[in-house]
Length: 99
Image 1 (cartoon, one colour):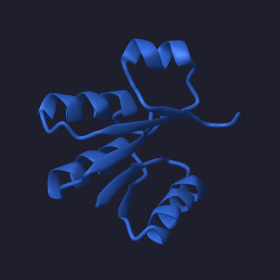
Image 2: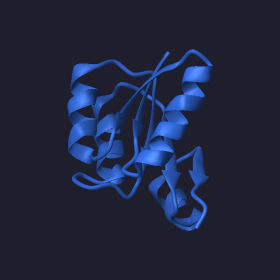
Image 3: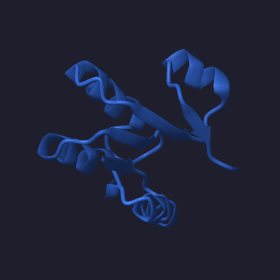
């Protein structure tokens, strides 16, 4: 399994990656939307862990790109946004960041 982590907070991105490595799961990190798009173009991923609020194209735009590609790749949205916004964007599952 290979995971793309799109998160602009390095400590959080590395913590997620380190946890996945403990389960023998390969993970790449993109700290912004442009890097995420480049990695999605270069590599095949099984799932994306995606922060909504990132520099460059937003997490919402990255999600729309993935859905529009027809790949069926699952997206796990990592966000500080409230449930109503996430439901409106149809992101499920989602994990809310602590404030």
